[in-house]
Image (tube, rainbow, N blue to C red):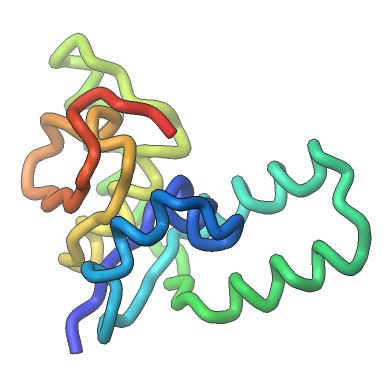
Length: 138
């Protein structure tokens, strides 16, 4: 069974049962689904900003448990730094968050599924799966 790294936007679509989630389901079936620790952090931030109660936070935690969250290591940090420097040199800086997500995909040699494919352009070796037009945002 193949694996995919899922960007925070697609995890959010799935969690909220957003109609865009259905567009990605065919790609996700029969795959190991991986999320970066950064996605987990972003999901908690989203919940805290919206002042979710205990019940909704428990639901979020159950969803997070469905994903593989690989551990951080020195190689992941090296890849993250390389992505940040590479994109800065190209005049297209990448956010800290997106760099961690891309680094996770590269570290484990797994394609990245995102609806924000413009955020991940020009990263050497990164395979991006998206149904969105380049530069679109969720």
